[in-house]
Image 1 (cartoon, one colour):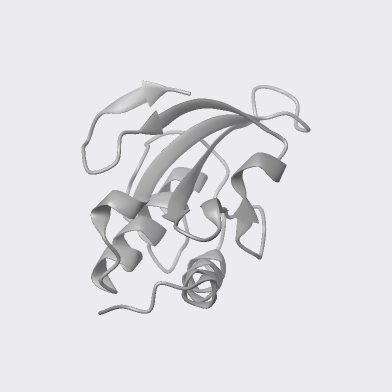
Image 2 (image 1 turned 90 degrees about the vertical axis):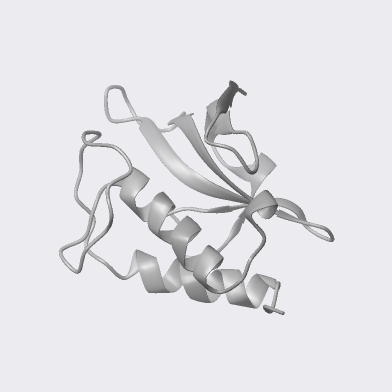
Length: 123
């Protein structure tokens, strides 16, 4: 059984965030490399890493949003949402070194993956 804790999420967030960031949107959801990647690459790498560690698929969802404190066109962003029983929804984000609460971020949520599927819904 994996350790389903905030500490475990912080470790994965820090591990992936240590890779270099590459600005841009396309292509989406590519495997991240030691050379780094875009925000969607970070989000998918965190998703994959948590699955490898045994986190349940139904706890993990990719999400896209508009960052409200950044001017377009550089404000579209991708993150990983994790559903925790005690803490609610938390966000693993390459813009922040710590795991963040879903409702405290300066984001306007656009689309969120439906847990356990490859389908998305509007936020």
